[in-house]
Length: 222
Image 1: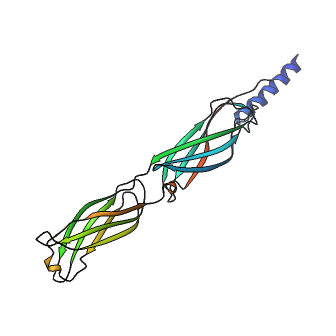
Image 2 (image 1 turned 180 degrees about the horizontal axis):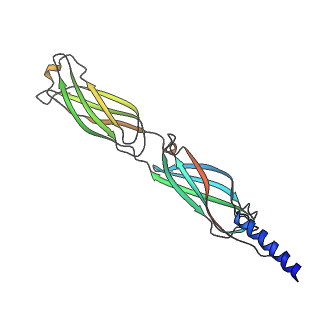
Image 3 (image 1 turned 180 degrees about the vertical axis):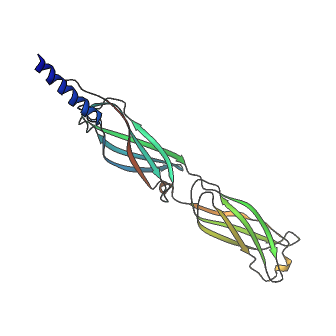
């Protein structure tokens, strides 16, 4: 009897030692992402991007809940959106789960003229001003036109200034030069946006990443 108690005590001590060191005989809860890819489509200026992928329960427990976190990025590295796909059914060990994470946004190119002024000296006249990309997509090309008028409301001439790759929220300091020699007769000016071209909507999202999020499993009893 004493020998039996001794062996039981040794077994308990070894078990406690393993547990104290973080060892466990419990099956592992794990999910491994096998593959994923990014799909994009544009309908009526609305961009929809989707991460489609597959993950496998590579652990030894039945997954009651699992999630994959997907992140959508602009090509300059800016994080645009982070979304989650989660399971709706149990995933057995070895079972493959196909997931989808979606991101949608409207694409609105817009250039707003904040201010402008007429500058004249003895030899030339010009319009100087500031415009802002107040849309939600980079402008690949923008043009502002400025008509020059005499005191009698007669349009004497018109000229333009252009820019490229104007980012969202960026300011553009534009200058429009009077294209004729009789600048002394210029009395006032106006300005207007005459062209704005955005990056193709499908280029707003350039790439995506995924990672495993929260997991919850239960041991399958034999």
